[in-house]
Image 1 (cartoon, rainbow, N blue to C red):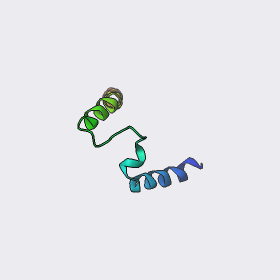
Image 2 (image 1 turned 90 degrees about the vertical axis):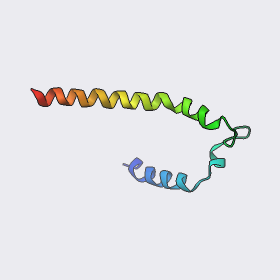
Image 3 (image 1 turned 30 degrees about the horizontal axis):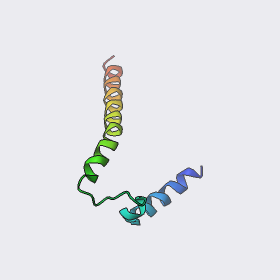
Image 4 (image 1 turned 180 degrees about the horizontal axis):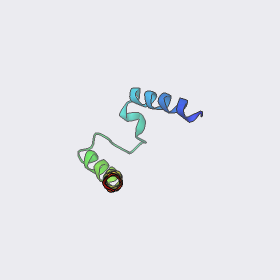
Length: 66
């Protein structure tokens, strides 16, 4: 599978890129409200992942209980 080889390369390349590379013109990461705005943007994803993990763990406990 090609994706398993390209994913580490892309992740490795993104580690060495600066934040300025990720921002388009007019998208200021150094603004005082930038961190809060980005937190509001990513928070639903974290909540969804946490909810799915919670449901899977509870389902696993129910299966092991029986």
